[in-house]
Image 1 (tube, helix red, strand yellow):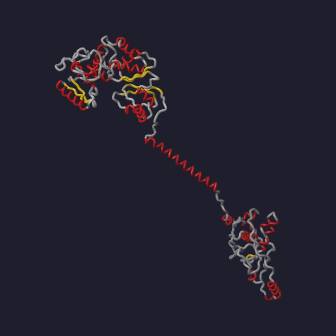
Image 2 (cartoon, one colour):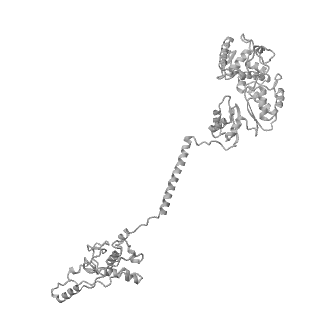
Length: 525
């Protein structure tokens, strides 16, 4: 038999080596046939018998022995002398060994035999699903090395692993898993964003001024005394209250105070730490009377006005207070004092509930006398004289320098060629008339029956004409040294006051005052 007659690709012989196929080579071919030419079935499946893919369609049955081939074989046997001796090629085993021999199920073992037998097809018949080997090497990665039939292929058992690994298919996550992952990613992104905003807000709050609370919850604790100066504005007071820790925010406190419609009065006010805005407003307006006796007296009030404010704040009747006031000796005043006029110290006052009326009045008188003592005036008679001067300074001074006004008053009381010892102050005349209008007649100006008529009666009036404040008392106790004899406020809005040494100069300033009154009808009544 010539080599050309054995070139059958379906033979179990190695087409490149002219030898029978080894078990490994048969297994590779067997795997190729079962996967339709795609190395997708892992080798482990052939070793364990699990997860074997479905068998390929059965190839055409092997052709019966060709009579022509038998005749040719007989002719060759009859003419041996014409044949060239060829190496004896061992016949392929009737049933090639297969890894299926290891399977436990005989039926499946038998089912693989037709697949191997299918390779013994007739010459010239070609199947589209049959692999074609062009080189002695095989697609399983061998380099063409020839193996003897009895060679143990155990050492090369894993040479097919690369093909098997390449064919491994990674399962794609389900839609539910992918949805969970997307939701988790969205949640984490949102959490990071919220955290960044929160952290950024903490840094921006101090820059934007929004770190201060708008109000304290109240009611507060302790005591904080805040002084409201004469003429001080509400914004300044609000800043004081915030700096002292009384209120949380000056701006919101101002809004509460403005909404109340109240008027700020000078004096000393006692607050608590961390009060509500509304409670602090009530302290300034004297509306916290449910806890203590509270009232506020303005500088310049006359005795009747002061007693009325005390009555409203304490609940004590006006008549009881007036009866006490008409007995000034029991409060330490000199015998020429008619009542407590001038001694009821202006400011904000608080007393425990149930405090007797006399104790309240005595407390107010003591504030005034203590101030006089602090200025070096200890004699009650001299104290009384200082209070009279201080009350005139408070009524006449306006926004002028109180020290200059006090100096001019004392200059008038001295012998001089201008005033002749007469004070000539309108505020004293109107006090005696029981009015507050500076518009009075010449007849009233000349009426000596009015003891407070300083035009008709020389020297000081018989008593104070109102309650002087601390500044006025200090000016009366320590007047400025000057040579002024007259003064007049020429503008009631700006409180501009002019001082002069002669009556002619003073009259010129009076004309300026009259011109202002003409331009501002109704203001100079």
